[in-house]
Image: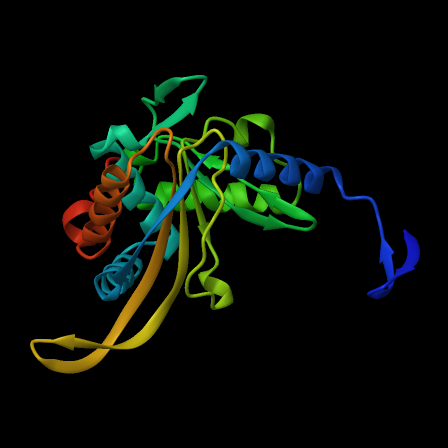
Length: 238
């Protein structure tokens, strides 16, 4: 660690870690090469809260809100394959698999392990696999196959109380979803004011591969699924 002094006062500095250098390179390339646009929506999470509570009361394994969001995203990507894409050298690449990457904060940086075939897995399976990957990421035990092949990324800062933020695309993926905290807010229902549970989501899109209408339709569909989880989040291997 080196020390120095400049107009702003004294400072110390050290070489960036290898993981921080990779993050800096990838994020700089993403912002430079991919023309980002952003869409946001405020979602009624009361149905998800009720659905999760009932599911956890009935089952031996517990699911999280992140598991619900992952499954909902997978359902929507399967319905909208034109969003499960990337842009590469003047070609649009359409992915057959729905593989969801999770942004995981680790000491010195960020890793994005991937749960494969999320559209084909139950909420409990998604929970088990994502929990195992998060633990491996934080213990620096991820293998290359654990982070390769992602087609969409979810980053959630709700646990820190962050209500809304914008994420940079995880190349070569064309979409990343930034998820905020579930908030207690007053809402209007049938002309009256009542307590509500709301969660903001911001979708970042690569305009080379996805247009505004496509992104808006996807995000609107995601809101619909989360606001009626019992109707859409059907398990395939429970």
